[in-house]
Image (spheres, rainbow, N blue to C red):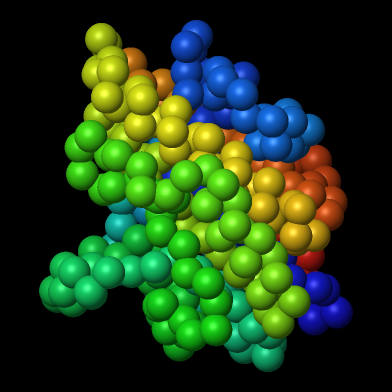
Length: 282
Ligand SMILES: [Zn+2]
């Protein structure tokens, strides 16, 4: 491959701060994350198709560099149905990297309950774990420090933290240290979409507090990664969490930012996904 390891933080449902309403989770001290995002791009996630962008099509765009919304004829999700599964099986970045002899891993920590819930006949797996499985790669891989998608908040209300930002920063540093052994490490950070769906016109203070705590941990994770010398890219599939005044996804543009990578000049998520693939010679 000729490219040193890249750590991809694939955010779910986090719109760009430029398209966030006043008082959003972006509006706080995020001394590492905010400048990184500010130096990056704000991408269109609608791809010219009416309706609200969804994770099934959005993440398939990011993983394949193909316009999955056009393939489906609509925004579709949250999971990949048969059509998107076919596209992921053929074209997903982990599949292509595996075929090229490169080393890729999904660094999410999955609890045993996840495997029970995902084992039904219908696919309930998100596009990222689906794509790694499609490549023949394991979830919870050995030899990688695994990361919880909540970044150290409990998954149930009131989402109390069990890791401090400093502890999340240490997770980032540990990942950066491991990265030398890999070509690509991906974190599927879906917790922002879960909190985003709890939005309402008069936002629940507990959701806002958890949202802000999550963003501080995301900031700390990026700090740990960058301090550890990692090359990092941050993406998102669609808006949602940047606006806690609505419970649905939004039409907000999404961030595409990084450190140690050339972002180019993409204007939408498909073009950006092609830039990302290009870093691997694909
Ligand atoms: Zn969602």
